[in-house]
Length: 110
Image: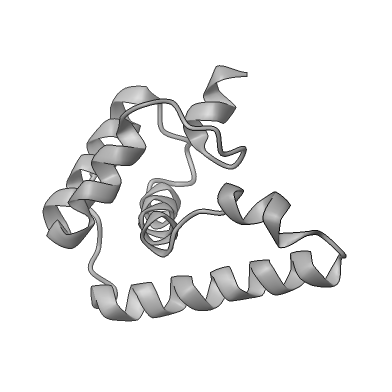
């Protein structure tokens, strides 16, 4: 099984795409009448979105099979190796438990 992360774009481009996506998410929630004080802390950072985008591309390249914990770790580690500027974000995502509902660590615990 190949856990490598294809370089489809520079990190700057990936961050710009993630920032645009985050802006859309914020706009949708604001238009739905949600209070930003209630949801802003729950949203992923731009770099977290980039990591999840790269992880999703890896899953799609592997016939869409959801990774188990060991492969999840290897894929995120490979992202950190191929995009060194994301290393701190990756290790943070692999580290302590998160309160964010979208976070896979929270989803896995339920």
